[in-house]
Amino acid sequence: MQRVKKTEIITLRVTPRVKKTIQERAKAAGLTVTDYLCYSGLGKEIVRVEGLEQVLSELKAQGRNLNQLTTLANMGRLTVVKGDALAENHRKIYEQLRELLREVT
Image (cartoon, rainbow, N blue to C red; front, side, top):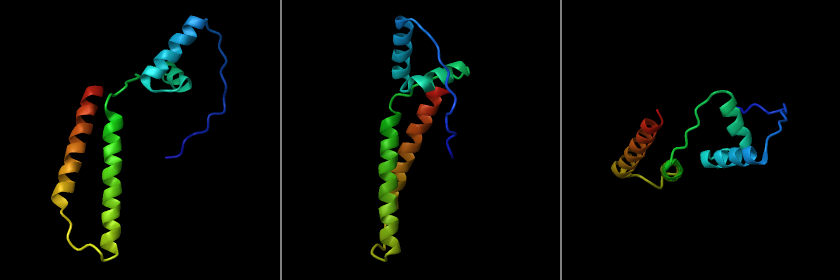
């Protein structure tokens, strides 16, 4: 998916207190101030899901492992794979993602 380049600038004046509040809320949401204000201005709900970083990190690690196994299999250096453990890990990750999704919706 290609990201659309942001070319338009909006300038606004706020009090130091409002600026600080916006910055704090953006940081708490894990967003830049720009993204926070855009989401807020468009009426989108801003949800911060705790634990998502760990799940995504584990999912990436499993993907790397699967890629390495695939490479070895294609080279003929791997003939038997214990796929049960890999499938179980993916099932656990899938369940964690479903649980996080339930919290958001």
